[in-house]
Image (cartoon, rainbow, N blue to C red; front, side, top):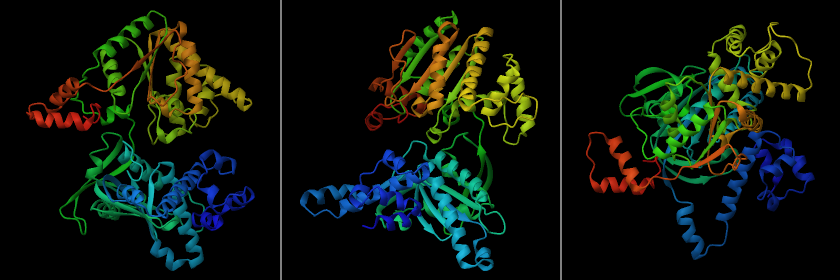
Length: 529
């Protein structure tokens, strides 16, 4: 295998010399890890994801080339066969490509299309989607295959919004900024085998969903993301959407309701944005009472930490929401921080998000308006002008002259910013008890993790309860500490699962056989129920 040619097929020929100097041949290539790629100088996360996905595809091709035996035939029946999947499909199309082809030299046009394809690939890789096929100025992208996530429709829309923002910023000679249209649809499909490699790689797919995605893309305005109603139903209140009404789309039976996704909403909690408000808490009474007891102790000035962990869908966010409802009538300050799998490399992402929500930032706020809102929030804790300058810088808001200019080294700036955050927490706690909730800490960035550690240490003698939720794979460094209580959420028993089903069904009577089937197929995981 020609490793250099393989890199060129991925558009990553810049790393060819590094691979050659480090003796990366075909055999070594299949064993490379993310850490190996970093040592080879592949600094871009998007490029590392592209390479790792391509290496995984090489392994699939190699395995298919093994000598055929009865064992390999048996394995291939399940490994390579087509399967039914719930898939979210994104179709991106470059606006005005026909006009570009008539006004540009073919070589220049090739560079434009290449830059567009590269931008799409890097953006999709960042959100862990899969570029299934390049079709000239169109790109077909899957979310939910080969890697499925619990929030694929949400990830697809975030990817679409990122694309319509990123493509116009490309530095190329196209006369005017490039724009894309994006269409997104979700539905049941049959996905087949991997075909080809590199830029020609695609996965066969059968079903109406890709056609719907392509058609709703056709009704999108330049620079817009349009979702079909099947996707919209899965998004809850996560995005600000504009209804476009029912549309008759070519080749699609019946009218399709469509929505333009404008931007991510300012909703505080992702769980609450997706939650059915009629769902009541089931089977977590003991855990809820434990949280209430720890809150009572914290209010007496003995800071407490509750480490709430369990597998995905087990009910961590639901239990936290029930506790928030329980103490809502009591005077307290509530601070909530949400980690995200898309921002594990973004320093202080959950902390910045909390401050932006507390200040009430809107998407169309000017820099001055944001500073005015930030000043109003910081005034409550008597934050100094120097600390306010550090907080504004952390939020990427330009200083308009109202704050002093601080001459600090990067390490000094980092330590002063951390101290400013700690001082703000202490000032809030002097006024009334504070509840801090850090959700999905298995996705926390390193800087926020350090800040959380300092926060837990600082709350020893403050009226503060810190609730930290995470999945079992996260190694929480606070386990076993004197003020830390670990709460492991297990799956429901059959009785609790049946009770939840009855509450969800409401007045609809379900047969015993159907109840038993739901219990069995969901394995008593609350979210699946």
